[in-house]
Image (tube, rainbow, N blue to C red; front, top):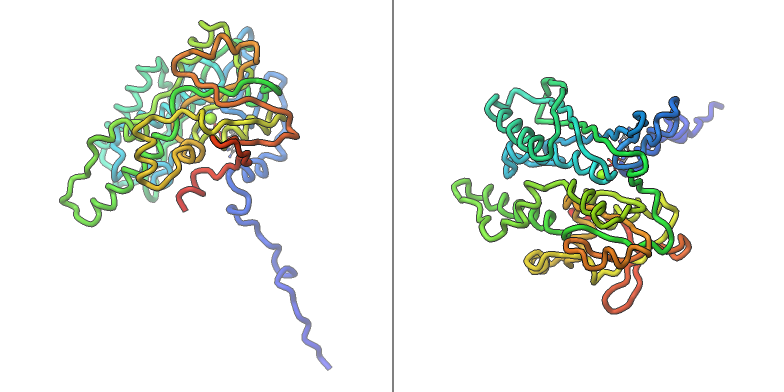
Length: 355
Ligand code: ADP
Ligand code: MG
């Protein structure tokens, strides 16, 4: 008698891996697992803020970023000029994170017919303003039509002396963990813009109420790259042992440094620099202020480590805060709360906060 054989679904089709199972970093690791470096001049490939390429007595730094409408920006509240400025700045920030000097840039666009030339003029006005401010030469790019929406890809080339380059992997046990500026305001700015957007949707005649939040909204819509930190540290006689820019949130960036340097850390929650008004606004939004700094992202400040011997040089510098120190890997990645409790640092990241 014919016996019906039960088929397991897996016999038909191999189970496919959902991208959500991997996450962004897991996906990058998976896609690049078979990549081989063919040239000894490729000093650093994938895995830092920029690639590092030997260029004789100097190194060339290359970094690229993609901005996708609906994912990275919302044109409801993002003026084109600001968008262009931000697209340039977030790339320049990656060169600053390598302790380099940004020099050239290419800009590529995929744009649907929904946009006017005037809108794109504005976008380029923003890009050119950033290029003028940061002394970067726009040297090329590519332009394509798009089925839907706007996608911008920017690549920045920078330069440094080989011994100046700061990698994510250079932190050592005992190093001091430092951050420039203040954190969390860009995320609060985004919450304000999102809130006003929903008001706008309910009543299209209503003007968004944005006055009084200039700092937070400015941090979100018009961030700056900390290219000044390089000279500040040279002036102090300090070479950071590692450095990264804060694009995804303090927690995620600390974990990158720990992972790539093979160390742990002790971060003191009470030391995280947060602007006073941002602190108040966070509470209004029922967000613990440090969480806005740890998980919010887009502040584009620099996170770096320096040797313990540099403590005297750095401890009183305005605009730089020592927020903790690096430990042996076995001690884990800890955050010490103001009441002395130790909690594990996890990269909740952007997505985790908003869902
Ligand atoms: P950042 O936040 O500083 O821009 P990312 O987290 O985007 O850095 O990227 C981490 C590293 O992975 C970088 O070295 C980057 O060049 C590399 N990378 C990202 N996406 C890809 C990809 N699709 N293929 C190859 N390398 C990638
Ligand atoms: Mg970066």
